[in-house]
Length: 423
Image (cartoon, rainbow, N blue to C red):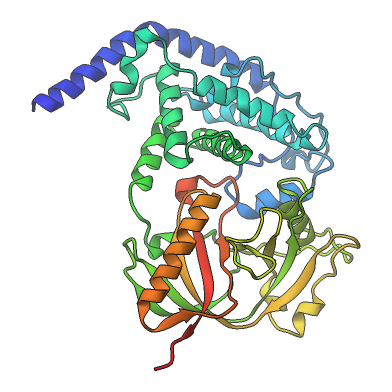
């Protein structure tokens, strides 16, 4: 009881400290979000959680198109200035700004991302300015805030509280930031995803934090993972021949996959970060010799291209594959799929039926996380007593969701070819 009273007292004290700034925050949010209400972007936001619409937007990289204006091109919105990060952060994470106004701001960020073909550093620099604002320590007079229980027992219309919650979400879902480019890139990506989640959730960052903390604190079961798989997309068929500890740390499956076909590309050292993904998406949505559009599928496979194991493959020696529609799932039919555009470095192959060991996990697919899951899968297979890793087999990573799905809602898998042990 005393603990509860203490918790309530701290929360009330926080409210008193923040009461002076709350009204100012609301006024700022209303004025700044009004500024963006007239700057509606003319395209579907790239921050969609629908994989097919996300990839379709990537395949049309030339002219912004507004679905509500029957495909008529509109003037591109100027990107917001990096000098005023709060003009973006305040309305997006606020619990009181309406979704319509938040959507307009997200669309300006989308336009900024699209401008990377002209200035590759502009988008990253802007996200860095937002991160700098987020990671700025609180004033000494407000150091009580991080000590107050999170989330607060009720929604506080305070920008400082919202920033504190946003920082907590980033800390929950991203590894510690070091001086490597990969660490900063991961944090930027997670920030973009989280801001989009704030747009879609009543209560802004308050409700996003509650969901992220709840889901990050438990291991997902395979039943939950299946629910996270995008609906309406074809995926390779398989039969589960063995299951173990489906809800614990030692959960894994042995699956017998039917044959399926893929289109693949290999990431090169001098290529842009998303070049392979965009190349495959363009092929699926009609950038091929026959200009034929195909249905999107899931998952996206990543593997070491030299069969030496994903843990030994360099960052620029990785093969990315999209699954082709089931119409082409045979050795004969795969050659009937649309031929890639000349010089596109894409290849189409049929994947023979195979037996694979599989583990699953949510969150981001960072190099450290992938290595951890690979070691875990190898350990589980070795201890199974009935299966072993096939000689020469390499790990394969499967990602079922688009890049802008919240980390705590993703279905990721690591798999490797196995065979039955002789009696």
